[in-house]
Image (cartoon, rainbow, N blue to C red; front, top):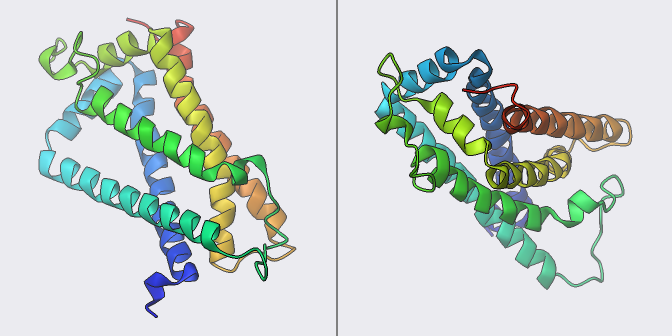
Length: 224
């Protein structure tokens, strides 16, 4: 049987794509955080991206492919687990059932829905036709992403959508990081507490980082 058709093969692919997605989340957060520098920060960042369309869209397509592969094998593993007989099925004692573990498929689906919404919202700018950054340049002729983001997150409904989605991401990450290390065989009694702490730390860092933007706008810390 081909390696990719085995349970461990699917888990390895999940682990590798998961690592790539976590790295992307940090890179994306760094870019988003330029909004705290004001229009000069995020608009300059957006201008830089718009000046390299082949590279930017190539990177986006690669990340979407990785995301799609991650989802595909997550569904495959979920279906395989449902078909598996309870007799003879062993669960790693170090990965005890937790809420985040039990809801991985559901938080994953929430993240999928959010990614689609996020692309329509800020990347393709379809869901917010009242202000399209590329059609409203700032005083320096750059897409006014700063104004677009603020006008969006001033709406409580949009801020809540992002808050709930990032919460689902945090839950998914806290267990997902543990699963990655388990798949790589790094799940001994000594390492597991540290791995759990790492998963929680990454989830908190990313969630606080992403949530700080809509929160700052709602509180008026960042404004036009």
